[in-house]
Structure formats: C-alpha cells, structure tokens
Image (cartoon, rainbow, N blue to C red):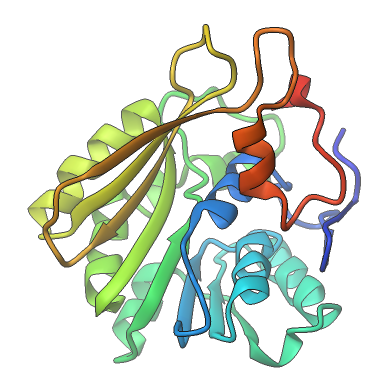
Length: 244
C-alpha cells in the first residue's frame, strides 16, 4: 500500500483521500514539462492529489488552476495546496474539463495532464480508483483534445503522458483538431523492456517532432543518471528503481 504522505524537496503530498496516488508517471511529466517565470497561467486537468500543480508552482510564478471532478481528490488537492508555500496562487476547482471549457474565456500558457484512464486496464477493486482510471465515459480523448484546443493560449504548450497505445490514439485525435505534437520522449523502465509510457508536448504550431528516449533503470535495477537528473529538483531521495 502507498504511504499516506509523500515528501518532496519543497512540498508535501497527502494522499489518503485521493483515488490516484503519487506515481512515477506524474513525477516524470511534471519534471519533463518545460516552464519558467515567463509562464503566467497554468491549467492542470485531473489534479488528483495536486502533484502536477505543485511541481509547476515550484518552477514558475504562475497562477495555477487545478480541475478535479472527483470530490475526495478535489478535497485532497485543496488540502495539499493549503499546506504549500504557493497556496495563494494554487486554485482547485471541482469541475469537469467540459464544464470548465464552457464557463471561461481564459486561456493558459501551459496545460498539463496525467489522464488517469487506461482503455485496456482491468477494473480496479476500489470504485473511486476504477472511475478515475476509466474516464473514457466522462472524458474521452476527443473531449480532452477539444478542451485543450479551446483553452490553450496561441503560443501555449500542452504536456501529457500516456501508455503507448493511448498515445497513438491521442496523437491522431489531436491532429484532427489542429493540435500538433512538437516533442516526444519514450519511456522504458529497463533497456530490455518495451516502451511503457510516452511523454508528449502539443501546441497550435506545426513543427518537426523532437524525439528522445529515457530509460529509468539499468538491467540490474540501478537508476539511470538521466532519470536522476530529470527529477533532481523534486525527489528528496532517489526512488527505488525496482519499483518504477
């Protein structure tokens, strides 16, 4: 069972209420997303514990809006924001992406999401986690692309992580909405393994795709230097590479 509290270098994540716990996926995505103090507005879609919002708060001075449809997870985001040093610019909202997109004319310099749905996953034993992991019923890939297209600023960037098959599907869906993939990093847990996750960055601007690969651990379970360097600003201690 995951610990109820997860300590990072500059913030704490309580995760006793949220169905979706701190994961390697979220840490990879938050660390990989390029952001600096020129970023003014950030949108986190499906905030869960609030980890991505907090990671972006650490590296920017932006106002950050965190959308979460699940009430316990929304309350968890509120709690984690309230105990952080960036609480005055972290704003949790209990709305779906579809509702929020219809209710605002605001656009965002960065949109980020770790979509908690896996089309081929088996139902999780916990109902809340099952709902969170199978959001195709409430947030389809087309809904996600439509929301991002409307809410992303003209020069904004959308960062997302998917399993391999969902990444291909979203790439095709986004392209039909004139959202263009600019950067891709393929994630392997070990050199001999297949790609487990795909980190992707989209924008309104068509460019050649910058592709790279990241392996998290060596064949004998030693965390790679690339993974250490990517996450160095966040992890208190190096994670156990056997668990990634």
